[in-house]
Length: 545
Image (cartoon, rainbow, N blue to C red):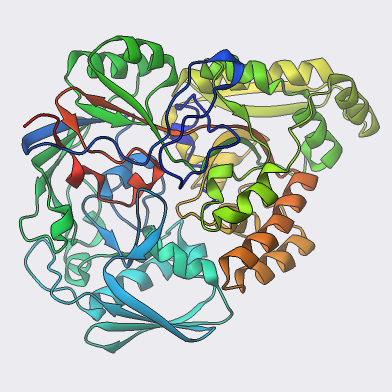
């Protein structure tokens, strides 16, 4: 899904080489720019024994634990272990049954889900169809303000059609809706707990009542979140190996690296790239890379200023020295992104990836050509405001590179620094985008279908931050989203990819795999982006018996 959840952008430095498939298991791609080779694998070595507890570092405190509002790495990293979805994305990027044991589609606009029997919430009550209906409908309610509401655009009705059966009726064919039930839109929580907690739900004052392998124990605001093992968890293959998990929040990249090296944090996802060399040589654990669906992009926020002219957008793209950006921000081990949706996002029909993504041309680097486009657009000297943040050093590196590129071709790129919280607000609050033209984002899918990313460029979609609109694109999207065959849908998605590259509402920069650091005492963690919904903490245990 194209959800540029900006807070973690560019905290990964190494990028998937052009021959790496996100769902192919371990690979050993050559690093660009002369860097050291690295492996991409969906899992770390299996745990060898149980643990009393382990501590996990987040780069920021979750702003919510409400599944309907969770739209960023920190909340989803915690919730993946507490709450579950009707479907599940596995570490090797496949969609499999979750709380729904099976499903059927009697006609293109009807989906019938049979729920897994005997699943208990953390309070011991049994999950029923009523809980599913309440959980899903809540995201459709405008009063909830869910950023996932757009996923339900095609839904006409969600009904209980049996004690363990839910039927969803669509106004039009919508393949992505079903797939997204493996992500936040498919989350199931206790309907009774929603009513009881009210406005406190998902806050440090409220309680969560879900079905996952861990339950929320405590949330000490500003300090930590602690989860405790759910002894009655239904999936015996994912029985937690640790009794407790403690999440700590460390925004400063250097301080986070020191926490890994000192052992005060046993591990963490989205490791700061500035720490890679130190962590690799520190002898305190392992730095691992996993499958990712992400690309670092520049998202256009304002189509009424200089960037309204596609020539200006193309000029800025052509002026980006991506190889030097990668060298400065990523230690020389990244690859330029060929399109807004990364290669790793094409995992649902991997046999089509070579044809539909690998054949794309490398992004052009042509400063003189870019200057001509700026002159043709009569944009010389025009001001473009790019928002930046101290959240991660890489954000500043990329922002400075964009500013320098603009200066070379006659554009006045002004950097506007904002706090990490304000940076995050850009992606959920339209008012926070006022006065801004560009933002550095991390565009990625929650599922292995590239169409998921491109849905967020539809007219009026929540993730279409700049309100870009193209009738041809909308028609092409609807056609792709009504095609049930993954291979055929990939071919139709390639047409959306072409329009996006021709019009550049999003300017691709570079790609990166997921990263995770595991201290010496722990192992077993999935290494890729599937951790946002897969109960990753359940698989972590002691590295030695």
